[in-house]
Length: 111
Image 1 (cartoon, helix red, strand yellow):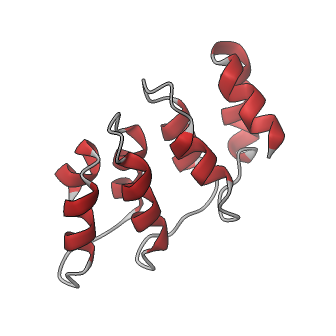
Image 2 (cartoon, helix red, strand yellow):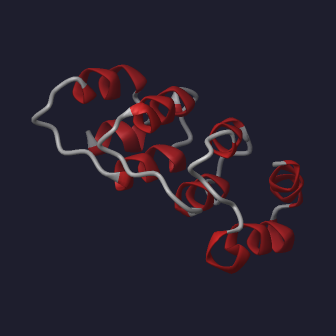
């Protein structure tokens, strides 16, 4: 599952999440958020929907915004989830985006 998340392999993530023997945690979602794959959004959606993953704070947002991907689809998906908070850790995401990523900063301010 870790490799499938890292590579953004939606189909593989979907199959593996159905298996109760597979251990799942927030680090899997972090890997998917970092993925540059076009299917990363679908993989993150699946992971967010899995009850074994505890989603809280800004961790996933921070990983998504610091990926090398200019597509903000994963970031927007995370911002639409009420369990995430871009102002966590003393506004770490907002401060980082303000300094380095104007496009991401604008997106964070809209939420």
